[in-house]
Length: 250
View 1 (cartoon, one colour):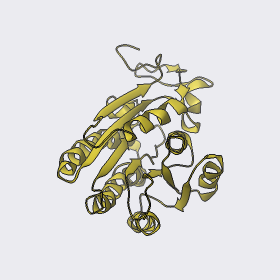
View 2: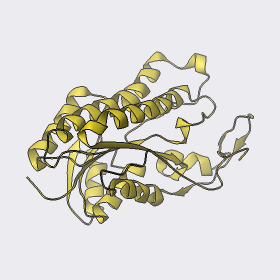
View 3: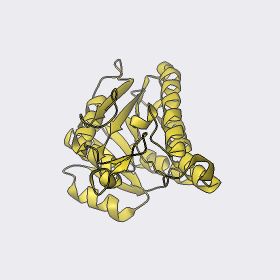
View 4: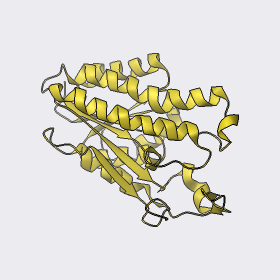
């Protein structure tokens, strides 16, 4: 057992996951760094100025998810925070041309993975002492509006909103809070194409570069949500590059 606050961050090796993990460590959390690439996770662990535990895991694999949470239970005896961040996209192709295998891979990682993690988090949080905890889901701006030719990503992020609301409702009786952070254009390797070359496809068919923001701001927002007492919840929080095309006509 430990008196420290224990957090799991999935997809912790790069981008928003890395930023959130570092922000949580800076705030005094012991952070379990979960992801598919051990080398990336180890790099974050070396960068962090606090307690971390690296666990290689794939949220799309039920056995891997169970092993991750079993390791956390074995090591720390409790869990106070789950940041379900791991996610993937798909190539921009017309809806009718998206292969089933690609659709399924995105759904397995972006929706089924967070569901499996939520189940395991519930099993720990509802039975520990003190009882309860917090789950934060990474929804994305795409939980509100689609980009052209992004049906799999958009569908899973809209579905994440439903998972967040249901988890928040079902978690009340166990003092489990659930909220969602919707991030727009954080500067990560996945968004490099937005700021380079011709940019990204817009709904009117044009290609344009888009403004981005430092991913650190997204990480700090996660740490803010995580630090609230369990009688308080941020159900939805949007943090975005101010000049990105989202509000109104952009």
